[in-house]
Image 1: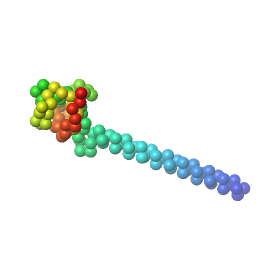
Image 2: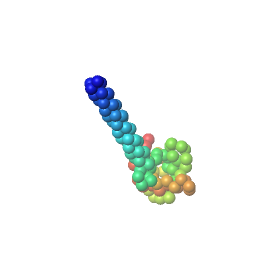
Image 3: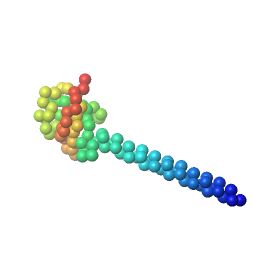
Image 4: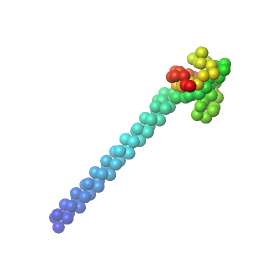
Amino acid sequence: MRSSILIVLCLAFSLATVAWSQDQGTSQNGNQATQSNQSQTGTNGNQSMSGKVSHDGKSVTDNKNDKRYTVDNPQALQGMEDQRVALIVHVDPDNNVIHIIQVESPQQ
């Protein structure tokens, strides 16, 4: 009788340990997903974008959704007219305006 109680207790402890370790794995995966989203959007609202600069350098058409954004600091794109670029920008979605933080690299 004593050995069967001991076996049941060991089994219950083992199951509780397995459930706890699975829960820890889930919360760690959730943190990784949050960090992944922050790397694309950034913690300060900046986000990565790639697209084509207009002929006059005052707008960029996003590759992802073909949406055209007006650039509020077109001097950042000087000399890159009609080229594909990768950018880090701050987006004002209400007005379709972007502020360029950094030009990462030209794309072919």
